[in-house]
Length: 351
Image (tube, rainbow, N blue to C red; front, side, top):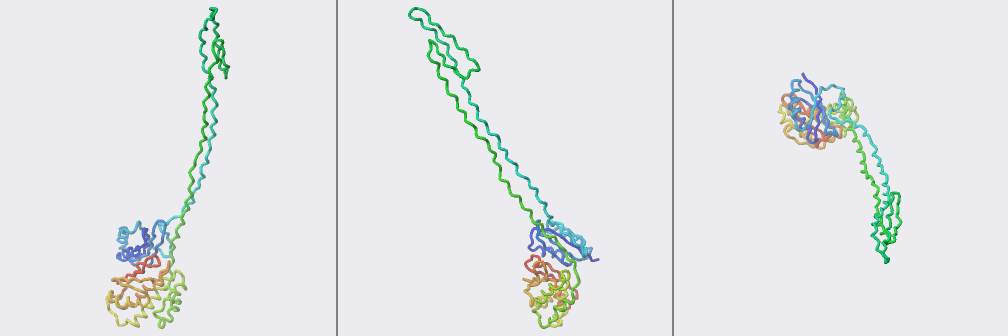
């Protein structure tokens, strides 16, 4: 039984990611319907829609889990028309709460220290009076009592002593400077990063056959200068019908070219058909290199940012090589596309 799966993965680097994962999908027996790479804050978001046998799903899951390029990977059943967001996509960050910086409180200035009143030195006891000439002893002056309330002392004079010694000057106490707080300069809040654009899966629509008929109306006279017609076709149809319309245009162009130039080249194996029919026919439209069963298209004019035109080349090779190979069955897998960030578009062909 055939099933469709949606693969979502997260990787650090874009270069070569679609090629590496596409080979794992192809080796697991699945075919790729569409793919997308989106730049995100967490890394590169990979989304693929593949189709293959249900019995090989577990083997594909094991191969993707073992892929070193993928940080994490998940697989979901694909439902047509259902939009599923990528599991690793960034969420919109919350608005940071701004906290007012603390207000510096200036401490009260230190009051200057009160001047200390020096305490007068104690008055030495008077020496005994010398006897006068008459032989009488001199009168000794009684000591003067000191009280705590006295702030200053008058010089004490006695008849026997000279003036009291001058008290020492009061020490000068310097006033301490007031302490100031130095606050650090507050850092500006980091602006929130913009949220990545959500991944939107287009609902595929059938090909617009009328638009395809108009685009290929002058095919015999304009081929191989049909790129402007194809670009106008991609813009004229609805977004969901762009891929299917380009595929149909490629199939009709390839079948027409086979009947005109390669109708006798039938019964070839796949490798010979790619080398002698597929690659030369594509070189009339774009620059192409062949690497075994893969065709590398350089600077595809149909693949612009976000819009792949590889569906035309896949349909072209299907209509051109299908009648030429012996088994009559053909599978073309778009490994990567420059519209999603790859350097070149790569198509892998198998029978």
